Length: 397
Picture 1 (cartoon, helix red, strand yellow):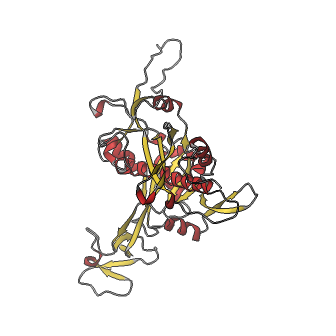
Picture 2: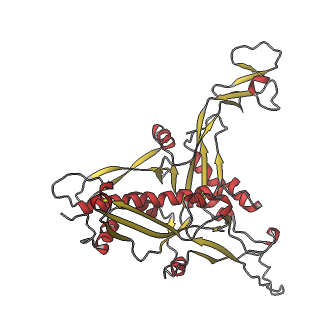
Picture 3: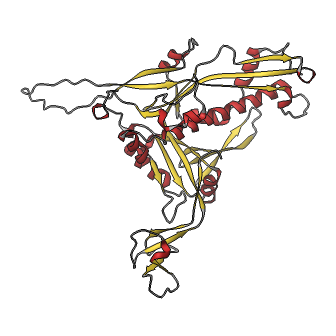
């Protein structure tokens, strides 16, 4: 059995052991094509010369109105503008001592392989947390008309509807609102377990299955929704909604008719003042929403995030501390990766060190739609927001 021992530790062998562990969530994300390789990004950062941030050119799309080709009209040429895109390297590191690792006492199980399994799972979660922090930051953009337009048009909020839970048409409607005909590009969704349970109860999602090397098939904690990968993560944003009334149609189940404040209230009716809705009139109808949560889900499409593992000199290493607790061996893990959302630029407005924290990635002031970079916003050309296959769904379940 291999030992957790700094003297016998083989960095390359351990890296191989970690890399060959099936990282189910990240593998499925990659298979969904939401993550795309970008050789230009890799070339900028792979030399490990300390570069952690770069502005990369992103070519503009050809446009302009065609002239009539009639043998008389001059053919006018136009130039496309080049967009600039800020890209940052996200560095993460962690250390564990031997007692941090749990392992099964099973005959023939290599302890160091068990450690490798646990490290691989940890890194899998680490990368997912980075992606979710970036998504939160993108939808927290509040400056610039084009940025605010993106957030508005790529947000599908159904919390103020009678049926505020995700249903049959929710995903299709959300992606269509965001990208129109480009909705076909969407391939995966992140959602809270309460949202997934609601969809499961409606039989709208299916389990993915995994077959191991021994041909044993088991259900994964991964699903498909409308044929798109669904990843369940309880770190998704959740916010409490206080009980209130909303306007509704008279035919909606549970609808209450609004009557004047001096009227006699019959069953199925409510006074204007009790609705607490500004400007509502007698004869309209309302629906009561009790205290509940509202959940944010994120949908991503093909090539929505450029991904590169730019590497570190020593991804894994071990050292021994002879002093502490009579002697301890510690395993160190380091990684440098780029997750760059298509059509969006990381502006590094609020970042304290070379690598951004998840809190800094979640800061909307650090993000902007890519543009041509003129000093005045009115003079800039921006990427068409419908070309960016990202959206969020806000629902009560």
